[in-house]
Amino acid sequence: MDRNYWPTRGWKYKDYKFEKNLLDKMNSSLEDEYNNITGIMMIKDGYCVFEEYYNGVTAKDKKPLASVSKSILSALFGIALEQGYIKSIDEPVLNFFPDFKTDDICKKNITLRQILNMTAPFDFPAWKEPLGDFVQSENWLEYALNLLSEKNDKKRFKYSTIGTHLLAIVLAKATGIPLRRYANKYLFSQIGMDLIPYYPMTAFGFDNLFGRYVKGWIYDPQGYSIGGFGINMSLRDMAKFGFLYLNEGTWDGKEVISKQWVKDSFTRTKYNYGYLWWIYNHRGIDGYCALGIGGQCICVIPKLDLVVAISSSFIHDSRNRWIFIKNHILPMFVD
Image (cartoon, rainbow, N blue to C red):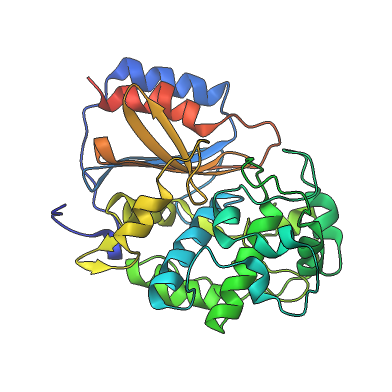
């Protein structure tokens, strides 16, 4: 798609004629149902047409992305695959961990693809992942490998943050450099996002992993960048990342992520999920969402040439931001 400019050095802004009653309805919802939202950006036809901040947050503030980090991890996987660091996503996960010994055929056959689309078998009931025990363990890699299941239930969707940490370590091992540095060089710097500096981890409590003390890109006790959460980012950079995917991985004439990887990531399986992206549809309009607990969201809507980025303060019972987008933002752009 031809663009008049690329927001590498910053977004350009354009007035958009929003209907007052729709804005009033959205603002009322922000005060009531979605009062932990701290920022909303809407990028239409390449221009920022809406940028507002709430609850004392400003454009300079960076918020923990929670599981939105998974979609960034997916992008890095696509880049590494194109560069040849990863031969195939059908490669068994345990090929990257030769010191982990098992005779179980099921464990040996679990692939990278299964973790990317959340069908890898793990020893926990669906939606009851022992994330607390995982982050309190002394060795996160060892814990994750031991959680791989001997049961061959690979066709079942099982959302796993612990599994994506294995993917992050696979990338670090395959590329030979820390994931944060790899992301800075081959992703963030390519599209004008802020580079993520190193910050030492002083503890591994809740606020250090998910809350107010999250800085940069946090890492586990062994020094591996966390794959499933832990990136701190501004709302404007969240919008840039979504814009890259809106443009099928190309930025100002350069392929940053392969078009095929973006297409594959946005391909629905029998579940509403691609490669670490949620896939929704409303009245014929597809929305591809990076979602994080607490209400972080990057939503790519190609049919409308639209990206929506939403930042939020963490609460446990936040509402799905796709529902907010479907109810309040889509009507602003659909006749």
